[in-house]
Image 1 (cartoon, rainbow, N blue to C red):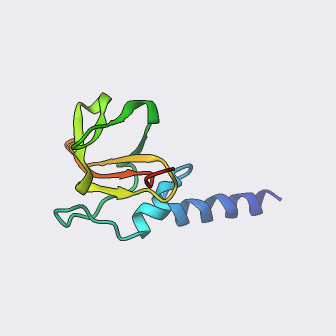
Image 2: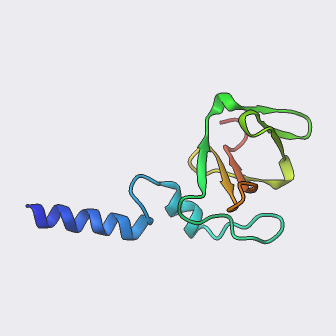
Length: 103
């Protein structure tokens, strides 16, 4: 029984790139790029932004804890319905995903 469990865990890690990072599968394999043409994400650089940390304005999504506004034209649709912020090594935003309107 233990070898099957180890095989399952190793297969999961290889398929998703990590344990518990469901976004790795859809973001990394989705071929997403930002408006500058950069690939959106690698393992470990995308994080869920809690809904209560996000507001909207006429110009875009306000990410309160990051002190930034993401213009609507730089936002991509999140197929899992969550807000995601992907960052560069220096912490600046690379990509932002938001739930589809009316969800």
